Length: 78
Length: 424
Ligand SMILES: Cc1cc2nc3c(=O)[nH]c(=O)nc-3n(C[C@H](O)[C@H](O)[C@H](O)COP(=O)(O)OP(=O)(O)OC[C@H]3O[C@@H](n4cnc5c(N)ncnc54)[C@H](O)[C@@H]3O)c2cc1C
Ligand code: FES
Image 1 (cartoon, protein in one colour):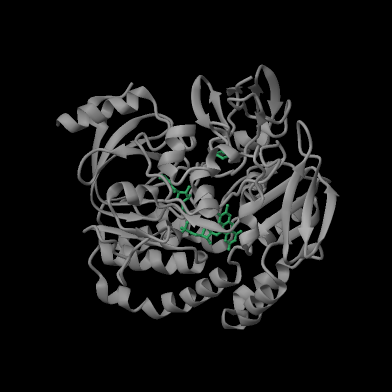
Image 2: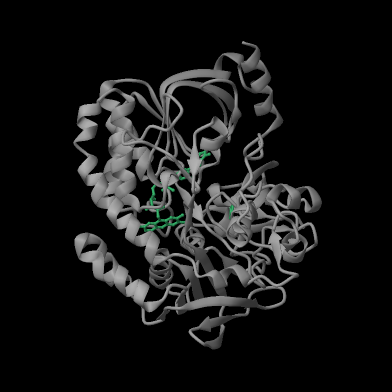
């Protein structure tokens, strides 16, 4: 099974899984921290709300519109 | 690195959005041999209804259409690609995972579809709360929901579609709360004999957990969703659950059309019988012209594609079919119109703008979106008001904001193409 890392933790995924689905299945299942400190998770699942924005291999991307690839490095905002 | 020569491209026909409408438009236009670019911000074509993924089975019709798209060498599909800014007349700045570039076109068909309307209520920012179609999309994208208890609330047939997807993947759907009344829903269902395949869909989607005149009041939990309080008729019920999926019908994605200068009325792109917008050489089809389901999107897409390549007579032959599906769309929109009680769900401290964390109480005193925005920063975050501006329109009747470029966050190297492109 291919593997990527989410905040340094290894995560195995089925081919075709979106990064949003991966985030919602690992760690605290969140994607970012809001300006007032609340943890947030993907909301719309379709590229509108931007709650799922994370850093993927150093680039800011929307997790719900990105498909997991072997070796990806995903970092969420603490 | 980007080479200068690749930062400018030209196509005869550009289609934005590769859902049913955009795919149909490309296939209708392609036999004429013009160069066509079909772009979509998702990783795969299909739009909302034919969203692909490890947990999705794309219907045969969609697979066939995809296969046919690949068969045309004059159609270029740009997946994972978004519109960043306007770059002059009939020129757009685009970005995908690898590069940014300016694409110029002779004609454009907007097939940007619709998104879910999400409304604020206490607790809606808790992890565990998603859109209704949003949950369906996330499940199709590989989210596991086996043995989870799920409450689905809001309005429209999408609640049942989302419920069916969740159940198929092993979730226990404990409640589907439809805000419309039983008489409205029954009246809608009774008219479905006119569209037999829709009636069959409705029956297969029916669920024992379904309640009408029911809406969400509060999502409960501290760090994560633990339960939900729901109004069902004149009773209040509390249900424990791991997920709450809420969607209040759909709103057309009109932002790009508006930025281009197309006329938008009642939140939908205005088109004539040829699917032409008020802007010459700019067409629109599918749900960006109003919520209507995939069949209407398909026929509108075909008409737009044909007209864009000058085949008006063939397009005219499709008008009757479009009228038939428009009838279905009209019934849908009246049956599921929003109960005014939904405008009062938010408490003073409920966040309305999730990007800038602006509370309902801080917005409510203002007279317009612009006034509220200047005073509170609402809508100034990453989503540019796509969520809170749409909600504020429902809650306060405020005109939603226009997009500012970049329309979505873009890399500096992409924005640099704009300067090059414009000076050419
Ligand atoms: C979340 C959701 C789930 C749905 N599920 C169902 C269902 O299960 N069954 C059903 O009958 N109907 C469903 N619908 C209704 C469905 O939208 C229509 O039936 C049909 O998909 C409309 O087709 P369309 O081509 O007009 O738009 P869409 O299918 O919405 O396609 C539009 C496409 O354009 C893309 N796009 C938009 N703006 C841009 C841009 N600026 N740049 C690049 N790409 C862009 C979008 O990401 C999308 O892929 C759903 C709708 C939503 C919002
Ligand atoms: S979940 Fe809303 S943009 Fe990704």
